[in-house]
Length: 467
Image 1: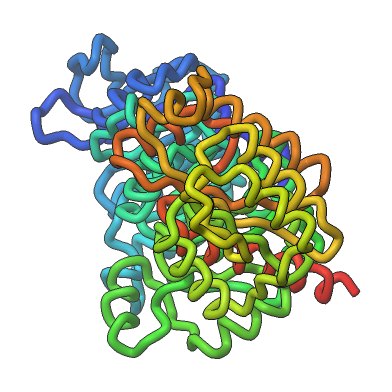
Image 2: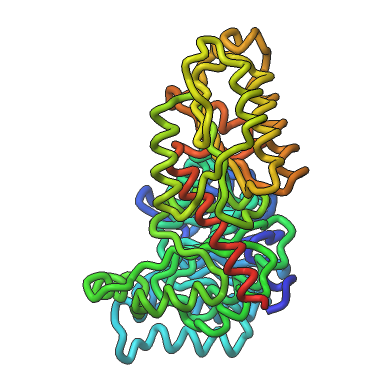
């Protein structure tokens, strides 16, 4: 599909929602509510079998009552009526649809008349559709929000990652999880059964979308592995895949869930590595990747570790070895200079570096800058302590966190090396630091090292895939 055609699924000027009633149990009216909560600015037209009002809008009882310029249909009617609804849309000039209805091949695989009629009618009228058996699209830029389950719009955070999920439930959870981690997202698509559009269509669009910097996918099946690999090799944006349904046990529920056919784990791993795609094992790992891909490339295995806790320095050292990193010795002149900032003079500096005896913001800045600019260092792991009174402990520096994060951002861009930062503190304070938003923050030091491992893998695989 052309970019402009795909754009209609995310930035429609108007939508018609089919299957609406003012019954308390009606699900389709939640689609209208969610769009209101997300401040969707386009026109919304409820369509149902009986007249009434929902959320201040009159229910139209026939597609003929719609204006001629409706751009997108969202359909939640019983499966046996989906094909005729597509026909009504086609006659009205609506060429894009989200089909939320279930009951197709995931429910009854053989001779599914409703599915056959849907495919035939969509082809006859040139209607492109997402689904069926999905919850559609959430776009934080346009305010379009088509899930039929109520969405807490105020909890969603705008970001630059776009996500494709084959499951509606995973779609909702990913929206909340990326938002809670203060990463946010640009667009999320619930792909469902993928009878018409699939991950290839979405990846092509997101590769060209100015509001998307990363592409993440939760897939229960991969429809066209060779094209996925070819696209990933060309993509200038990182692609992360959480692939489930790799076991016989999972395949039983996956098929009845989204009609997904299993792909073996070894086959999937091999294909993704070829393409420079990073494999995630859960939604949280997707957020870790989304965070680390905001940093400059990691071109090697040599890290400097600085921690305000000796214990965390030890943990990070273990994690570095586990993930294949080295912590090279630092120059004697630099270690002596850093040691001159100590208060008690009882901690010998090394790499990993226990900075617990130094309580000076300028000394910390000096150590970070000098270490990161060494030619034989590829990146850094920082484990810092935070408390509202930390500024006083470090010499009465106001807005210390903002200053530090801004410094790290500028330094990383200058030397083209990543710095993975975490804080040990009360969770509420860590969330406050994340909310600043100018620099990625990880949840703990080991996660920082794991994140750098993904960053290294991406850039090394990318180099191989393009060679």
